[in-house]
Length: 323
Image 1 (cartoon, rainbow, N blue to C red):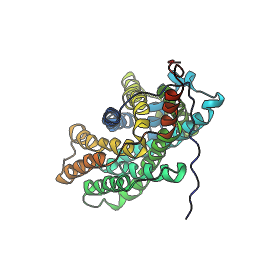
Image 2 (cartoon, one colour; image 1 turned 30 degrees about the horizontal axis):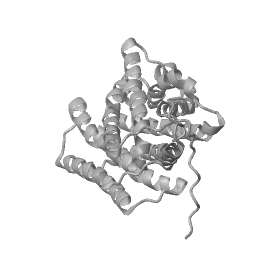
Image 3 (cartoon, one colour; image 1 turned 90 degrees about the vertical axis):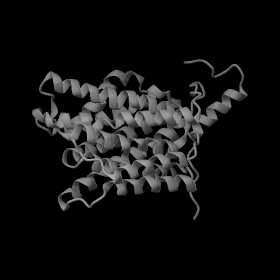
């Protein structure tokens, strides 16, 4: 069956791409995943302090919105990329809300293994939305990560947990969509310009839900809770998103998504150290499976990044400014 031709990537030649090789980019994606694995530490502390899951997700992106709102770009060459990033941010905000809600109820490792199915969603969505052909190795690696999640899950959950885990699948779907957008449609934006609309989209998308909550659910009640709200923004949002936005287009959606699955072993460690959750042999096997999946996926630069670099080679003396 014939497939639609992929849309032309959004590019702006005057924005110079980073000269990052695939190995460095992969390691940086892994680093951001380790930082993101600390989300449950902040999330549970904030929900224990009385904030709702919606509020935790809102504050996670609010600081980035306030600090970076001036970097929203709506000029003609960057407008389409900005709208794609806003859409990715909107879905990520809702997905993170579902994930925080899951972490409130079930063990961190259980919520984590569901969340770690996002590489498969990223590969499928990059193909379905942007015509990025998935290789056999990429698909196999995505299946390996999904299998690792089920291995780590171990025994079946109680029936009471089934509904919350179904909701938790909103997180991997939304993040998979964001990875596909980031690697395929945002090459015309500088890395920090990619973070701004993602944070803004998440914050604005959650405002209607924030308006329906009580004061206690929405506003931190003391300095410690405000400190945690700032911490979750700095250590799991602004910083990691900036690094990830710089690195992911250099390796493409498949490897970016699967390398990000290094977050799974980090979640096991967080659950063990902070929440006294037992480490099981199944979790160890799952961690090894995830690391093997990272090595299986070939790197492929974003098409937009490749085009911009081609322009730099063909037109000497141009496109080298940092503007």
